[in-house]
Length: 547
Image (tube, rainbow, N blue to C red; front, side, top):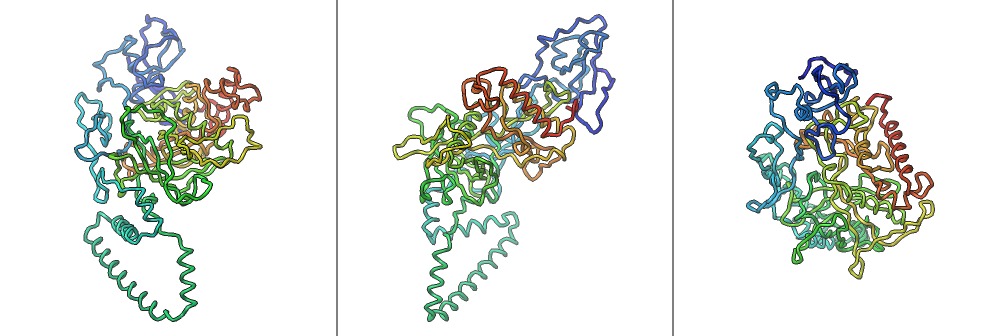
């Protein structure tokens, strides 16, 4: 039965196993394997819905050889367990849904359960026998679901300087100013319209008075030619939400039309029309006569927010395949788009990263309620996601209609080849900014350290564990962005260009750089795991026995 005897709690730590389970003095010895299974997430760790559902228990009655079990394990074990002593029913792990961004037109069938757009109401409601879901409604300034602009024609209009398109752009900007303040907004727009008319009249008078100056005309013409055409509003990330949900398979993009006026994809010439990309990973089976799902991606150097030794990362607006849309003024979302430099080794790393992301099971990309006990960590950690959500790895299409990819497995990073093929594109969830462990609480340090341990238990290594590759953002992600805080942060591991599983390690000679061998030794792989644990403890400032 539960005991009020508390375990000693380290200073500053709030997540701890504080309860003991009193054994029957005549109880059986608990063998190490197999323990009761109880309720667990797919990772298989001991899991408790609350900290008060985790207990220290003696393996041998009266002997302080201890282990940690959950309430559900104790129920399965049976000794001293009485359901009537608990104030709440026993529940299992539940996936926590991020604040909904995706939506479908009203009345459009959604076979998903819970349905698309359902707000996470918390465990108290969603663990009930009967659950009714609240669907997020449209905001005042949102584009109605299904009302998606023709992205390719919009881009063509912007590049040609179409006056009609420019006027539409101004209208969109005015609508985005203050959609919630109706009376003030109308007055402000009217004042802008009047000021704009007066300004236009003044410019016209100035033009008449200066019309006799040929030099002035020539200078104005040169300035006009040097001024770039107005950028289409679909390139703007202002007011767009991050995509934090999985894209349903039935709407997952098969094809990307990439709008790239700044040539971030490294074409041989700056593209003047959208570039066609096809999805390489993940593989999604479609019916033979299924319609191709086409999405539009908008890349701009202004939206670059990350740069490494081999790649750039952009915050990129994404127009999803119809009828899927989003709660935003343009119906778009933003994703993190990673593109490689024009060196073959950079392409190799991005290709490997796409394959590693493709190998990740869905459950390490999503959060669960409750707490896990991760071996090597004595303290409970939230059952969070480990890595960002994966939205696909895409390859450009060459003149023959084939996927164009560069793969030089024998090239060395010290002497890479320069390639003239456009960069592949890796799309994933944007997960914040790099961590600063010196500002962590002791619980947060343990939580971050547990992420790499969880990867290792899946026989995966990250390959370049530095603090710049651990992201932090305000949470919880179930709440709307304006209600999130760094008091409840969300962490993710990123950058898997050098990542590997045991299976790929033993097959790939490119992994030999770790120890100078052939990359086919189990001992070498375990050595790389050990090295990564040491580096993680150093980077995260984890003290001996402090996790």
